[in-house]
Image (cartoon, rainbow, N blue to C red; front, side):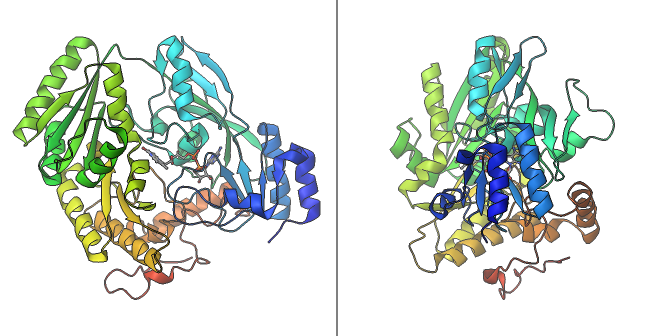
Length: 480
Ligand SMILES: Cc1cc2nc3c(=O)[nH]c(=O)nc-3n(C[C@H](O)[C@H](O)[C@H](O)COP(=O)(O)OP(=O)(O)OC[C@H]3O[C@@H](n4cnc5c(N)ncnc54)[C@H](O)[C@@H]3O)c2cc1C
């Protein structure tokens, strides 16, 4: 439903008329993120600072209009999709790195700063920002904080919440607050901890203070082939079981390797059942010692054709293949549906075998590329949206994979959030009381439910017809 002209005029007065978009053609650009569902907003508003964000949210609150904060739209769970219409609060005009403090090793940034840009700028001071989602060339630090994003190097360094010191946020009534700040420890109620990962459902983030780390003096990167995905999974458990926590430990199956090699020509072995990309960093002596130990464990677990990057360019190419893997899958099918369940590392062989069986059952190709070190599974179900009736099959296959994850003691998301796509599955892992406790926090901060409605919590207004009637798998969602 279009917004009233009077509301549009108020919004234009706040941010300038060129920063309010309401033509139906232009709105379609904002109807999706990188997940599979879409719904156009009634207006896109592009504020320049926290004061404008506050004024926009006050207008929305007064008129009970949904507000969906939006960064680069690379989210993989439908978080930025305006499923109930309303305002897409596009923060990408707020893209300044306000301060880098080389002594405190911190940066103060606006939410629209692109993740990789911060590390590129901080490199001049021999510093870097550790959480590195594979989408880091595009995704924003605001989106990362809202999703508590991970990335290949989060196995060793920790995910976004471990690197956010404090945030300036605008709540649903338009009030502006700082939560936590310069001190390394959070005291009192950890509101920053609550808001990181809240997926735009509790606040709009307008500034972020993050921790930076010293660039390690030495890095070693190894590519190892395995005859099967099962052998590669056992090797992952064995590495960690030997007390070694590499900076990154990534796995790609043969489907992914084929697509990546055709695109990047990075020397990935296309005869392998799976490959591991392992990186260690630190002082030269320790990287050498760790890499030798890792080679030994991998060889004991059927690893072969091990190749260590000899130059920074070679390392960059290996990582370009890994970080560009999802795009390269476009060579196989034009669309993908990507889930990110997480299982205890020791269950990787079982879950990968279950994922394979589900793909065969639905006759859908599945490519696995994931942060294996932390048990974070990323099955990409590949399909062509132009095939009639394929979408319900794809969604059912995705649902079964998540069900298998939960049955193996895992969780619904390792890093991509719950968003729209997994909200109906929340009762699989949380009791009614658990969900009620979360709902109390939501109600306390957003009494009228205007911030990103329809996300995280099971949504009684949302119909999921494809879920009905499949024996043993239909969801018994406990709606409020
Ligand atoms: C190819 C590819 C690879 C990826 N690899 C990874 C990976 O390795 N690790 C990983 O964790 N994720 C990964 N992702 C997912 C995605 O990039 C991350 O979730 C990222 O943090 C989203 O950032 P964004 O700026 O695109 O946010 P958006 O998609 O725009 O929004 C995501 C969520 O954050 C909220 N939000 C955005 N900005 C704000 C704000 N300022 N204030 C409050 N809420 C806000 C939105 O409402 C929404 O709920 C990948 C995605 C793709 C397409």
